[in-house]
Length: 245
Image (cartoon, rainbow, N blue to C red):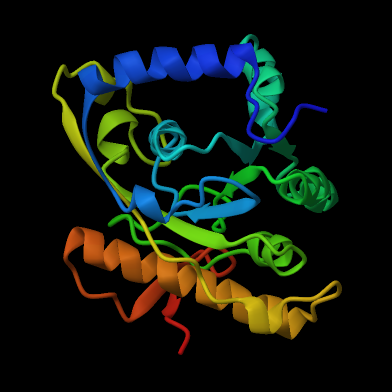
């Protein structure tokens, strides 16, 4: 097993290539990178507005001194060459919408135990909210957080959907030759120590999920300069519901 924070040659080469090309596509506005612990286990939780935001999130984390291992949909591993890159960069596949989805938490927990940086999207998929607001979160991120001692740091972005579209790919945006502004902010660690333990209850996991999504939503509101809506998109109801307390 690779040593923590010791990325492969492929990973270093991929990030190097991305960091050469990215400034040609976007104007980056990263803030709060000093809040990322430079060493030790780290769980990064982020909003998800586009297929492009993993690229900008990785760029920011590497700039802050961390090499993330993302949890991503397993379909990516089935794409020629892209799947090979995911394997070589030691990313973690998730079989979404199956009983095996939770199996991804096992290598993620092992990575945290080894002092690595793990990054995931608590919503589990790109937001369905047309305005980009975070949806209600799934419980996997909280379950992982509560069974680990890793600090849980929120990172919020605005703008990646203007580069490659939101739920659906829009390549015309990528080739519009307009540099879009992407804003990204790293927040303070989320307080979860009072809920942590080897076997957290479903109530504790639900509370942790609420705290994680509340902080991500609060940071998003600050980033876009808008008040938090009273309603939130629910993936289970497939529509808006009243925002939890």
